[in-house]
Length: 527
Image (cartoon, rainbow, N blue to C red; front, side, top):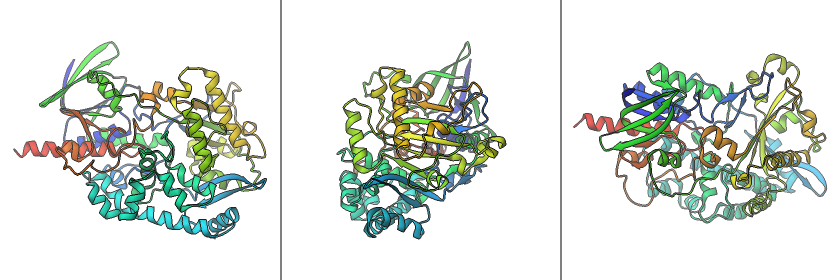
């Protein structure tokens, strides 16, 4: 069969759905082709435990970078809730269990937690100064994310010389050494620089700096919010918006090739036993650039991206008690940092870079159900059940390359052991069991993520994050370049996490690709 559209979108993840909704609303004939039987990509909810009515966000799990502009433009029926706690970090000091509690809206409780841990008010004052500066940067940069790319000079002028210098000219570890003295405090700040990024905090390539920036600028606040109903609710709302606008969405459609020319593109795909071809003026690629090159028949030998995270989903009968005495609901309400002191993060990177599984294994956890009980059946809520999400850092794909299931099991055990060091009872004693009597625990290595989602190397950003502004001093040469969605191929644009301002559940790649198409369409109609 042969079909004709204005735009074909390869990949029905959240970015592809954002593009589809914008383009169909503008009157363009739009087709979305999704390889899986469902849309959503990594932003999906699932019931992973047999016979247990608990819908967990299986891969991605929190929302920060999704602009309110997109939610409003598309009329999304979506609720994102704030968490009262920003983070809790358990640690040991002089043989005593303690920790650092940071509230989302700091009260004297946060200030006292800093003072109790560090022995003075110096670190809290440094923390306030640092994040005030980050807040100002976020307020400057957030609006630019849904606009054509600014130049470096424009951003530098808006941020100020000091902020520009430490953020973009030297490894972030150097600045954190300068700002903070306490190991735990410095580590809490540093975690935002290594989530999904495998690099030393002193990396001269500044990959952690870019990762840190994206984690802190969402909507001008950097707040990470909980999607009510789970991540699946986000993409369900986007699919409804796209379909209501008139987009065609085809699932179980395996794209096999893309051919492009200046005047248009041709997309071949397989559905069931049938071979199909869709002609279009533009193709938007929600797949990773590395995958796109294969579909384009490129012989480019660019290295395959490498993911670095271990994702574990758990269902608990109850939350465990802490040796520090902190209330369990308080500790788990925000982001819980485990073994993420600054030197622990650096040591873990060194171990993993040498091919060894870190011990202790750094990671962070949070409990979705403390903020949103709708993901659990009423009877589970009544019994006190809670979900738990773990995201491990510095667990690169290379560690699991052998496919040895025992090694993956060791990684899961090590993650749990690292948490257990701060608990009065092992987390396994709190685990729920499924209908078959098996513990409710599910783990995903980078290889598992690649196999399920076709993300090369399991890399959650589809590759290294890029600065959200133009490279160098040159002007943008095309609409695709202006919007940061240039693929290097005629009539093909990036619309996924691999776009310049992609990464995380943001919709930015989808929005900006749609804006580039509409800009080019308007220019052609004006000729």
